[in-house]
Image 1 (cartoon, rainbow over the protein chains, first blue to last red):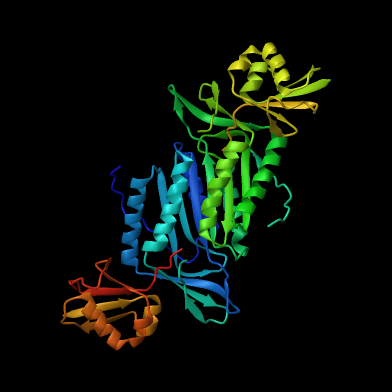
Image 2 (image 1 turned 60 degrees about the vertical axis):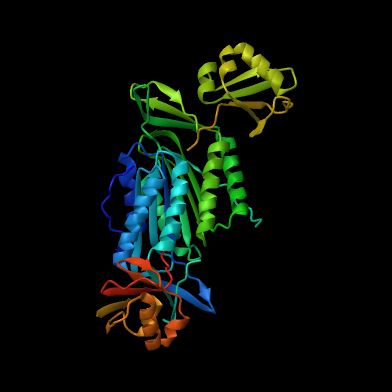
Length: 148
Length: 148
Length: 77
Length: 77
């Protein structure tokens, strides 16, 4: 597998809607070699820290490097796993608690491929892509998100 | 965790629509302790066998036992993993190639839980639930589906 | 006793019915299977499991119930 | 040479700017960092990485480019 793929747009302004995800699923119903899809969604939690509740995360990114990294990760994942297709979307800007900020979608003829690919992809994105999250509390104070 | 949950309806007549999945995702946006969702979708492949293409699978089940098993698997999965919620839907009747026949949806505060839970759930469902699939070719001949 | 036997999937194609009632005076699943294989020799070549009370049972299980189900390989998803 | 330095996230809060241009006559990332830590002592306590040409670089990397980026811990997803 040495197909070269053009970089695809990953960043979306604001939250990713359930409808957008539904439409993306619908678009795959013409691809009849696919037997298994796996979709990971990251959702903003209303964590309570020292009595204050997070009401939103504001995402920023070093976009030039992030887009480059997303492209590299896509290529590496296609090489590592037998996938028919792969889609990655991440929010920039403000995403409220309960809303979706990350949408990763992989499809393959076989389920074992999608299980392995989704975990690898999500972990690699969290580890390697320069995205930053400002966790905003109800009183407008904030702290910086750290991935665990 | 020893909550007793009532058995939930799993079987859906015909294919599971992308819209149904989108709506199910939307319903989780009020649950602000969730940080990660994982969704597995099984889609009917148009496999070609001895020159003939599968155009649909017709699913039947020993429903009394299948519902019992789905309930057992739900309970076991809730005990094994830290999940906020879990939904399982499987088609009965005819599902065309490209359409979705299995929809498994787990949510948790943390991503590691959903990765482990989705794989366990899908594998256990395929292994333990008495569902049968008649693979129908374009010329109306058929063979019986075997899980690999 | 009267026993209802249900067949699913490819097994129902062999028996040409999804359900039948038979008279059975023996004791275990193994004895029932002997009877069914005599009636439907083509079953011999098929892989299947037996359920009683919505639970899979082994060949030496006693038949307690009035309903026994023959299940071909599971193929969900 | 003239060097543009970009700051992201919590680092931009410390420097009170997202970008600045400085005059830099030394050679390596390590020398640049010494200069920046002198200007912004609060950076000392922060964890961060340095990128040149959209790639993470180590302290002994030579500064070739006209743009250097300071990145706090990644927190996507």
